[in-house]
Image 1 (cartoon, helix red, strand yellow):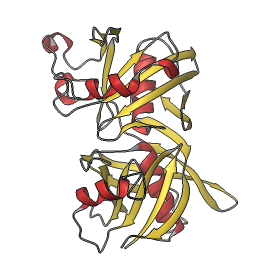
Image 2 (image 1 turned 180 degrees about the vertical axis):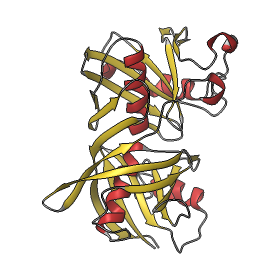
Image 3 (image 1 turned 45 degrees about the vertical axis):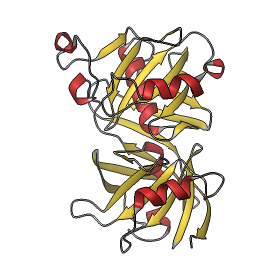
Length: 283
């Protein structure tokens, strides 16, 4: 079975053309994602046929759990499909079916090659039951955003803002450098906290300026990753609603910088790189 490894700002995935393949995908994701005994990745992404869009993207985390959406992964998905002429390279945008809904991707070209993409990531969701997050006082929030919800873990004061970008996110803004935060110990505890019935992606953020943020992400099912597209979107939304930023913002993660644009009302737009690392054969 042929595979290709790709990454968007260091958030790396194994890609397989699964339009004519049937496998135990969760188990395969666990095996291929292993960085010692497999290919090594944050998960597995499948290219499938769709009845409602140009193509369908299925995604499995490194632990085998299925995820709804991945902003970095879908940019590489578009590059994979266009570079291999699975869809026409003349298309102005590519529609992709995901568990979070249909997403539209505009490829970015340099010298005729796809080097990145701009993705319409959908509108953020704030209603606690839809994120989902189980709050004892959820009724008082209605469908509005829950910002800076009191939360403490391992002695760290971490007020959380909750948002869904098709998958759940909990964002906290801290004053100490994110590089010094013990994410490897706090992250899994937040991911599996009783507040989050479907677990959660956890983001810690420094506000550098009204146009620049620095962050690290603990991804549900994969652990700390070098970047997270939906996480960057959740961060940008929470930052704007909290008064830290306005309009377009650059978010620097360990693997690179992503650009997020939100008008405060409609869809969130994510822009960033897409790179192919290598291809091989899995026996």
